[in-house]
Image 1: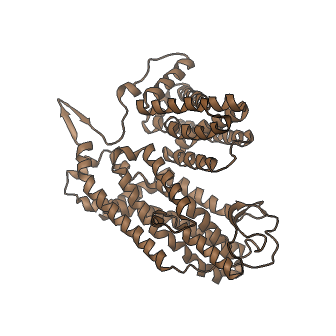
Image 2: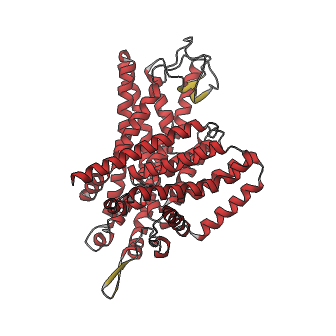
Image 3: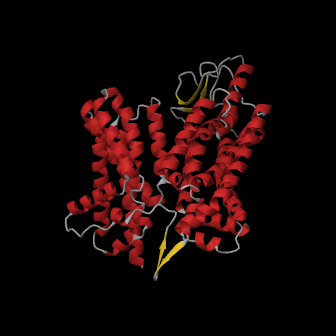
Length: 498
């Protein structure tokens, strides 16, 4: 078991995804309390309390924001523990040895927990550094409040187990499982944060504990039903009339039961993984000998030859674009295409105000056309191979980008025609495609875009006015293009050295 844990952790720590995640977390925590910022990460009755005037505000702000965001981020980040073994083709080898299946499951689970704990420790450490810099005279208060972060540990353990469960079933391993997990979390978060329900233990953010603490501390200062908002502005925020210092978290019996249920859920899920792993592995990974060939019925979703067969050589860029469009079309299941077409037709028949709501579901269903941009061709090694051919990489990038852009415009067409906002939708389409391409090149994973897309449309459907200004998307497109250019320049420089 020790070798499984060490090998898995080392392998995943070496991935570029991990470094980018650490950088993202450090940057995001630093945004919680920027000097002279026009916003407040956490607002609690700003017409009565002074905001962000002691170190407990920094801790509570980080806990509120990251308590909401970290479960889906962690879910997306670690949902590849078994995928690494499948992609390396070592499943069959492992289970042909005397490897204990229980050791494998527990080892993968512990490695998941270790990775998530490293992310959790990064947040706690950066929060402590910011607190010391901002309020150097309140070190003892900072130390007494940092243990509040411990409430996230049971949720981390449960997420580590549930990620293994989803990996064990082919239908839940890809985009569908990722979207189901994230959307399910958002629904549970919305229904359990502000009231006690039977399903509170499924809210791995434990947000109800944080909200209850804020309300209780406000009530101690004569404010009943405090007004709580996240990422807001207020003209009253700097009026230091009443001070509010948040207390250490004191767990109630209900909170303790909720934590125990989360730990019990992790144990039950690991049991399910254990009893389904063997049959799943034998069925999906054993080689079938045919003559002198070994045909692997891999557990990874491999598209059929007709879907990803290399199209005939064409000298024109137009031919490459058509080839990419064919690849996208034949690479999508018939059921998904049928549902997309039906919803797209419905988008033409609904009122203009409802078009964008339908569009959100269209984009989530059509995520297959975006999340793999920049990843498939790199992970297969083709992109490095064609680097030896003059302008081949640039032509491939151009064809892939234009094909994805055309698909995006077709999906957006009902909204473009009805709302007559071509400039905004075009900039949104360009930014979407380039952002997907950038994340695909840098992370070699489809999951960051899946997470960003689900969060984006969740905020939009809940009233976020995200399609009001094309300038934001133009900036995103330019930044993505610059990063892609630097990435390509680095590749060319390394090739010259070789």
